[in-house]
Length: 472
Ligand code: ADP
Image (cartoon, rainbow, N blue to C red; front, side, top):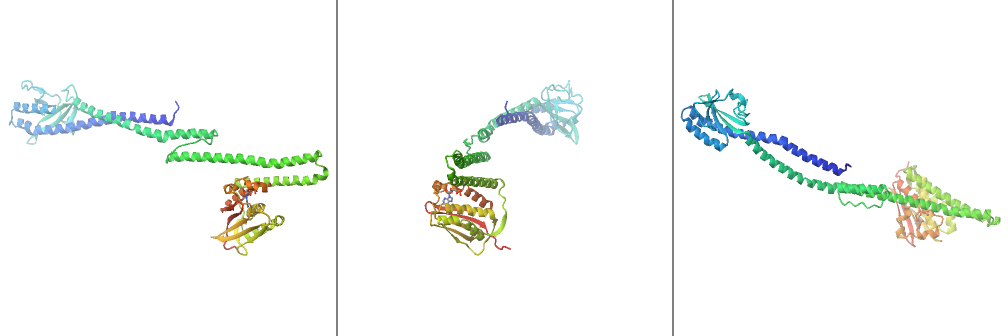
């Protein structure tokens, strides 16, 4: 049989029940019997002492006749459900409530030894072979003038004690059964709280392992099992998301590689088979070169992203003047700006502004953002680059008056390969990787980047950098 948690729990439950019965049947049984025996012996000892001090001593002091004492003791023995003896130290029975007195044939208890109780006041057994069944015999000495004249011995059947012990045990058994049945509630709780949710989790993990990441694992409880289920669901959704991202990435990469390759192949074939005459080939060669440029850019971006991801980005941090870096990057776009008739306005705080960062990577960030700003700006517009200082941070803002980003796309522009529908017509060369690289670089610095944009009005990208207070 498959040992499920449930069968194990049931097994433990049955063992618990059997063990409970075994304990009641052995320990509890012997303890109860011992207790009842002692209790009976105690109460009989009080009676025996009373008899010894009253009737029996009267008898020995000849203040009462044996007949009178016998009668009185007979009544008492019926009341106690026991037989009462008065014995001489030699073992001769003077009086026995269970048999009529026969003075001519005295009964002698052979080998009678009052020390048999060994320090106690009662003994259990056949009382020197006088009985066939087991008796509890309680002794009390009869003393006059500090001399033991005889003993009062009260015998009760051990069977009677055993019977009341059994009655008590029966109550214990009934209690045990009730307890056992009540503890079924624990089993129900276990089933509801642990077993069923665990089964659900197992089924869900099997589904996840089989690739069904959309499997709905529903456990609505606030305890550890609920937390485990929620974590598993979260893990599955994250795996699904990352798989989906990977799938999208491969699809996008293939697509972005295929279109330039197709056009390169097309132009080259046309040149070889003469569709494009040799005198026109220079023009088409330039197009081919352009396409290879695009492929190189795409490959470089992919490699950069891959490195950023795998190595957790190793930054080569130095202290440098961000103002200077902004000026240099802006200058590198001079040609493009001229041809597009776009102006770049710099509003920089302070002469020099030292920050601590990886200069080459920040240069790339500026390049990516500025490149987009110019790409999506209309002719004769101005792009403003501004630095501000706040709480030991430098904020760099690049603001354009271009096409803007639709509200729905604002969160998505940081994703790999994402391009807004607006931009597709304007920017055929874009890979959609620039901003995801930018974000990774800024986050690797422990800083933040944000965008504020209104469709048709313009966009502003702002990122922070750690300022160096006193640069040596
Ligand atoms: P790409 O290299 O193709 O420009 P990016 O990751 O840099 O890719 O940008 C992703 C998309 O975000 C762009 O395709 C464009 O749709 C949008 N975007 C980025 N910057 C701007 C901007 N300044 N104005 C309008 N849209 C922008």
